[in-house]
Length: 397
Image 1 (spheres, rainbow, N blue to C red):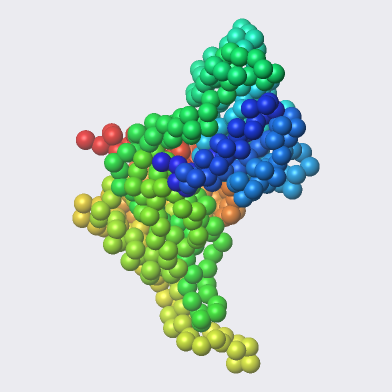
Image 2: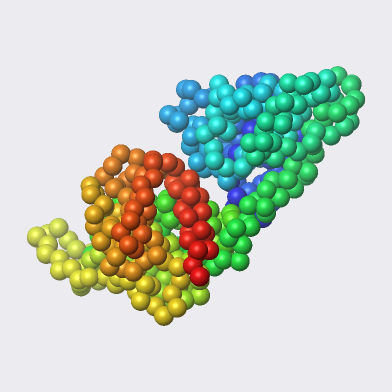
């Protein structure tokens, strides 16, 4: 359940921070990718180099002054889940109040993903009415609270407030993923992603700027929610439990991979930026500058979306249309292609183009009605899109 999952581990400042090192180790052993955020106080109890050695990545500690201009949003978009362990009284208070004054709290506030909290503090602090109010608020907001247990505390004290054991937290994290897997459990899904490359010669190709990020986010989200996913992609994809990766390069290769699998799935989401044309006669040897000017004759590539739409007993079909400026062509494409849903976006618009971590899309129905969505992360687009696909499929008699 944790293989390939992206987990942000938040470590706040308390003696129980030493357990976070073992927790990170256990998550990694279960196949998760772990990135850590340490508060300044946490670094007084646990050395950042220890966490770096366990996870393979240096922990993030500062909201300002880092290489990234927005470390909290990057971490939030990367994560499938955030776990805060230990969660001190102060950190719990910040999270419950929606404050974002440090990197850890800002990352949680920027995230749409599940939150798991493992409190650790002295008994008096745990039992304080303010702490209990904050815990109740976090639970009401959807957070999973693990522990605390009863046992030895700092300074030789005994009582409630001991951080849950790492294996108990790992089990809670796995349980969250298992619970979220329900709405797409049993679905077989096909996703295409990335931009195709059409060779001119063994060295050069005709391509586009697609990064594959949108398609990969859609594949990840489907897998997290329980679907069995076949991802046909031209771009490297980090392994995720539930996703079969089919690597291709050209439009012809993608067409063969998609068409051969589309009949065996319930839903196909074709996000790939497939080249419309390819060199008709690619050269077998590298072209030399000394040969002079070059003329290339192009021919059409297979229409992958139309091919799936024309299949007998085809899957629920979602297409993507990358446009520049007006989305009128996307509305026309939805009608022509016979899709069940088309997602259009203006790739010339800031924050919505190829290679970004955000997207601003418009859903287009076959009857031409459209629904514009605001700019959001590609992970959130993927989540909302699967909600819509799920609801549309349920509405079909």
